[in-house]
Length: 346
Image (cartoon, rainbow, N blue to C red; front, side, top):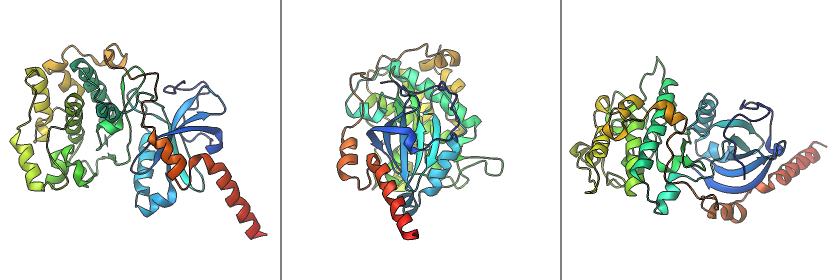
């Protein structure tokens, strides 16, 4: 099955291009998030183009107060194009849903592989650090804070390289608002959230994504997070855990990688690593060059299986059996609505 991760033959890289639901064939459901579901689709015009299509029900989004998040994500993604992002190609809507058509990454997300106890090496994580660091530098140049860096939002391509996705709680800074002050996320995610997000009255900036990058890479290596924080942990207890700095490391970890994590988990964001250049100044990431990373000169030792889908198959069952308005029946449903509307008018 082919994938789509570069400009297509027709040059249709404009998210506002005139396409609609009927221009795609739905193949199968592969995931769901807070505000939408994701399926694999094939563009009928050129059958070798296969994409991921995220769709969000308008009524449900409105009822849950998520419309602003959806529109903000669309606005942000329409301005972005980077090798280590999941890039947006088309957007459109119909009577029921808003659609976002983007790169299809067949390697699954990091959460999927962590749950299957994949052993990631230090060499893998070194490459992951650098690829995501380049993305965060790019987002900073665009004045964007992602605010939701975690294994669930990092997809792998067929060669094992990373791509960041899911901008539905991202925010954009500007001269008038150089810091963000609203809180994004829910209490159970305090274990991946930078301390200044819920402790600083003056706001926070791009450094929060680097804290979450550290938490994510720690979890990739250890299959658990560095801070034992749950939904019942108080703000005071969270602050104490962060300030204590008592992060446990396996005895076989070397000092270079431990030093890197210590610098990513600095409670003072001004002392935290927050650029690619700062990252590669650390011994663990020495000899990594931006041009080499962009040219994929380093190859992760872990490569997702190309014999399986690398997604939870229950998503497809939920779509077919549980979903009250399944996507594969949308065409018939819309036609029925139009016929009923015409009957009422006549």
